[in-house]
Amino acid sequence: MRKTLVWLLVLALGAALAQAPKVDGRVASGEYAKSLKHEKSGITLHWSIVGDTLYLALEGKSKGWIGIGFLPEKTDKKKGADLYLFYMEGGKLVALDTYQVKRTGAPVADEKEGGKNSILAAAATYESDTWVVEFSRKLKTGEATDVEITPGKKLIVLLAHASKMDPKEEHKKTERWYLEDFVF
Ligand code: HEM
Image (cartoon, rainbow, N blue to C red; front, side, top):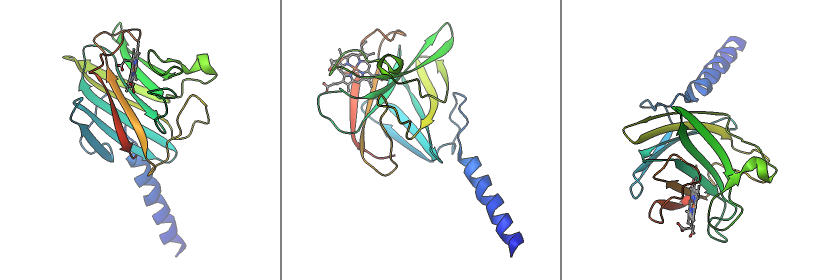
């Protein structure tokens, strides 16, 4: 009886560990639990929740930075959004955790608003104007500059990309999107 229990535990632990995607900038088939292609942006999202951590990947075309964000609900445009912005600098990925203080315009680094960069791991490949970016963060970071993600609870996902690898470069009005009623 005890042996069986030990084996079950080992198997369960193995399954839990096996679920965690490898944050290496490549998305293998079956690596993530769920995927969704957002037709309007052409961006495909992949995600897995392992324990208290969210693993998220974005695949899409962009001549410049690419970003994703979360809002618990819409109150005043994108005010309050928890935005993650990715760009390449000298062949290396820069992964920013930012917060949207104003209703439009550029977000600011979490650090400037009393938070911190909550990205646990990030990696990307960028070839032929095509991004594959993977990152992870805790579902609940406890920071005011991060949106808490509750599996099964609706939130708004924001997507955007810009034409330059510069976070000061605005996305076009036609290159930012809301995905309402998104559920992780
Ligand atoms: C993860 C990165 C970002 C995402 C997901 C994002 C998303 C969005 C969304 C959804 C809106 C529409 C707001 C509304 O009218 O309801 C918006 C507006 C705006 N954003 Fe961003 N944004 C990002 C980063 C930036 C950055 C870096 C800049 C500037 C450097 C910027 C500048 C603006 C401006 C000027 C507007 C108002 C014009 C418009 O509606 O397009 N955004 N953004």
